[in-house]
Structures are given as structure tokens and as C-alpha cells.
Length: 241
Image 1: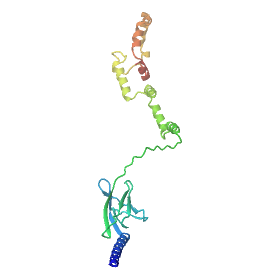
Image 2: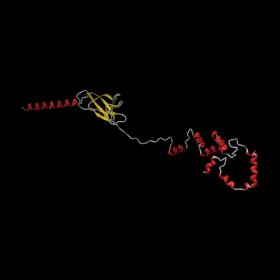
Image 3: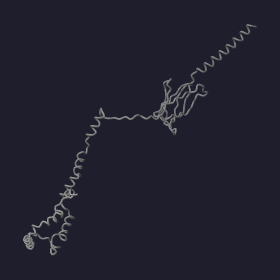
Image 4: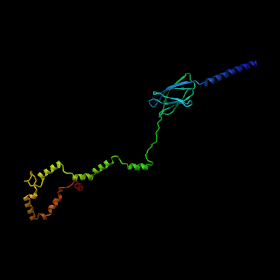
């Protein structure tokens, strides 16, 4: 009786051990699975072409297609890394228990926005050298700028205005002033101006004025000083103002 009981317990133990060994062996089997899917990213989930998809443990990987599709042979429990420039690196673990030989997933990466610090690049060793070179910089049209500043200065403009000969309009106005508002007498208006040095009547008036003592009278000087000079220049007018 006791021997029969021992045989029964031994058989049950063997059955349990055999089941455990079978289950352990099944879990430890390397069954290759094809991992496929699409890789997207951004706010609109746009496909990410040329992304790195690799398994660090196995040391192998692939690149995603232009439409974001990828296919990679994996094993249950593998950790797959998805990497793309401008996005955060993401890990995906293959489930340990798979009933099929294929496994699919859509992996969406998150944008990785980084604000870089300001970088100033100078072609000089120190900032002082750069400032000195910038201040002493000579432009390609420096000569033209100097000529422009020289020719448009107020002094140059006043000098040109004072030495510029009269044009056609000024000559015409001068002729009209001589004909209608000049120093000629009423008889000589609308005629060619005469030279008073050869005019006998002018000489007679001059002799009479000398006899009267008009030259000793100083009142005419104040009146003469009030009138502008005939050869007054633009510079003289600007200085008087």
C-alpha cells in the first residue's frame, strides 16, 4: 500500500516537473517576429522619412521609408529605439507573448524644441579689436562720399551761388529792369540804355550839382546806404540775416 502511494506521488511529481520544464522551454524559445508600422511626428502627424529604427541589444536597425513605413525583424521582449532629428527619442518594447509572427504599430514621436544660447562670432581676438576695426572701416565708395559731402556743404553751395553767372531768365529780368525801372529818364525809357559819361546833359547836371554843393551834403549817403549794392552776393545776404 505504501509502495503504491510512493509510486503515485513520484508520478505526480514527474508530471509537474515535466510541465514546468516544458513551459520554461516554451518561454525561452527565440521565435522571430516581423515588426512593421508607420513613424509619424509633429502636430499633424506627418510621416518621418529616413528615421533611425534600431535594436541596441542586437546591434541592427533600418531606416524608415519616405512615407514613414518600416519593417524590422525582432524577437519578443526586444527594445526598439526610434530616433529622428528634431524629435525626442522614443523606446518601444515588443510584447513577450505574441500569437502571430507579425506585429504592427504606429509610432508617433514628440517634437524636441531646444533654444540655443546666443553665439557671437568675431574675426578678432577681442571685442576691443573688433570695435577699433569697425570704427576705422573704409567703405568702397569712401572717396565718392567725401566728394559728395564737400560739394553739398553750405559753404560750397554759397560759393557757387555767389560766383554762378546769370542765366537767360536773370539776363532778361535785368534788361526789363533797365528799361522800365532803371535810372534812365522818362525820355530814354523803352530805348537802348546810353552811357552817361558821353552825355553832355549829364555833365551839365554834374557841374550844377557841384556848384550847389551837393557833394558836401551827407544826407544822400544815408539814403545810399539803405539801398542794396548792385554786386551783392548770396553770402552777404545770408550773413546779414
